[in-house]
Image (cartoon, rainbow, N blue to C red; front, side, top):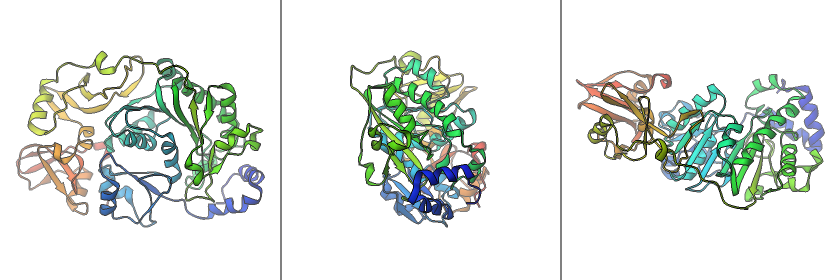
Length: 457
């Protein structure tokens, strides 16, 4: 790459010494491309038997795969069915390191565009809950769209500052992921446009924000809980330097070593005149692994006292009886009736994760799974309900083959003709949900969301 900032090149030459030529050599090669199987919808084995891609496992991420140069998974109907998420291979590591288990209460503090939140949700397996937060107004919309497409049920989405969240969730979460905003040096190969906004002073300036975010995250972690801090940059100021500062400011936290050292390098304390403990952090170098540049640190909070508790959302704000319109829809069109933990906001009906705490006073985009809209005495099912439903749970389905003309027309928003039946129907591709349609007079009226429609040919 000829557009790498000169100051960046000089800096890396000083840091890497003899390794510098190998590091610079990786910029002559294209970035690695990866996807992660959505085990909320399909097993890894079934996906491998179904997917028309050239796949090789990503060693540090179960269900993560490199795909071939000729593959176009973002153009395939399976992408729109949410069977996988396209994710840079190194970016799969932080959520793996977090060690989420079913039943955990988890916060993804800087969550957009949603790949790591999706990984966390897959680990939760529908138990416990995930709070995905993103302060940026445009990015939080993308976050919501991705979690909806992937069929994530037990997640709420907020658009808040870390400080406002910390005021509510003191000592609360079992796991917290802080994938912090950074100078993005590790993405220069994948995103050359990021070179133009980089400056020599940027790492120092952005580290101030990272420290503030990490400080508030620490306040929200329950005693005995674990937290991952990660960046996609090489700068010691944002990596070992931030971790060293954090450990000095928070003596109730310690670094945890993990088997991830099998694949990744250790941090370098000498680069920041830091504690020898910093060798317990992780560096992902693009000239040593098949992935881009990343940094990670796994913290554990000392187990002094218990976690805090909060009132539950559905007990504070839930409704005791399903709306009549929704009940009629469920009885006619669904084989599985969701009738508990419901919440109505204006004309929108949601299912609330049972362990979700009350979010009063926070800017909430979604408190759970959006089931649909109650409008003029009828219920219009939402896209999220379709994407989180299996074909077995719906009374009527129309299935298209992934290579059919009809599935492409559906995703483009066309009305289709030549179908029997009447009323709401789940449209599927090779048995996996794509969205809703409505049958009438031999036609399938298309309810695929207008903002998601794409020309795939």
